[in-house]
Image 1 (cartoon, rainbow over the protein chains, first blue to last red):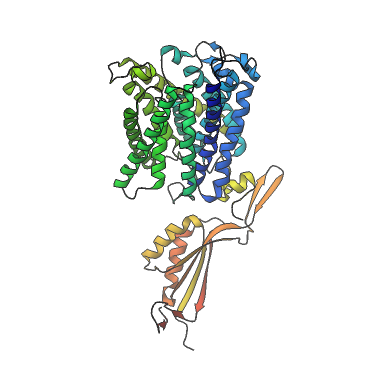
Image 2: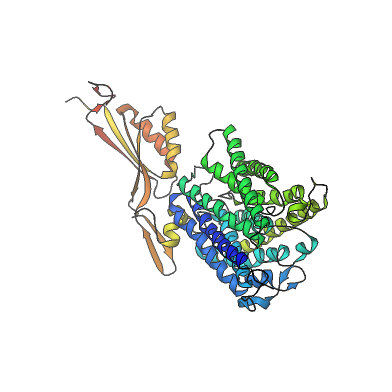
Length: 398
Length: 117
């Protein structure tokens, strides 16, 4: 295989762009929690990045992209990155490994939504290691690593299933295991720093160009299409959520940036298969359904605290199905329902349902296992004082 | 010197109880207040977090201070409302101080040095 210097340069840059999304999640979530938990919330994203970076080199990459075993998992041939070298298909294998690593890391960061303001740091490290091994790596193998889903023809361009369904529905299971924050539903837990959340959201939007365009794995027209539909869906989602929340009151800036992320999550699986006009529809619908998912979550008094489920889980699910509706053969070689081919929609439905069920169930098991052995939660006093002091011995109050 | 008819309430409460205390005071028809975020400790010297072999003292805990100047007759109602809304029964619920007030003058209205402001 011949390396392409243009593609290699592009994916090197995209890897760095996607890396920036993990602290982006940290800032986004950090602004949404109470002041006593800001350091903890931001630090969880860094911890997620560090844990996955090591796990990926040790054996995570091999589990996801090693030689297929029964369609469900990769073999350990590439453990410690054995045989992952400078050669590759267009880009060095080593670079492909790094590009996939930053995806795995941001996925674990997204799931910290479920445990905000109450997780024991040591338990999160153990849970994170388990989760990325038992949930992320198999899913990545199913869809991208030559597993059963890719053999069937189920498509996920940049991670609607692997990243967003897995993190979103995993977060729901995790939130059910760890339980509500003390005082949830009894008094307000308003975001303490909205500009920080907006900055985090902006970094996510920015990094998403690397996430989706980079998933073309080449600096070509598909990458350009992915970049354009990504931006289009983000904008459409932002305006749709804003509009929907405007009807119920003031159009909040948090709603707007949440809508943008809903649009981004939804376009992710479809970015290499749909055109910009469809991206508008995908973004608008995502902004609306994610908004109503969030309202439903609140009405059920569910403390999936920072809405990874409502935004990533529901948006990623919608986008995975939307691929089967709006795909145009002239872009990614696959036709959807609108262009007369309902078969892909059926495949997408199977892929989404299997991933959703797997992510929910295995996350629940991982969380329960950690809870029963180490305890997921901090003590009541530690939670009251805040995780910044109790978990890190630090405080943003001078 | 006329006898003081006004009292100042200084209530130190849990920050998360502020909303409920405001509601309870409003229901008692008591509206004017000044609220400050403060940190402090009581007789328990803060909270001591226990770790395996290591202790960690958190000796100043975030609180909210509510200051109100009200008529003497309203003091029991104010204390009752604050206590009902802010009490959890655990250490750290806070304290309510009642102080005499000599004068209360309205900034907007000249010659308004009165007892009910």
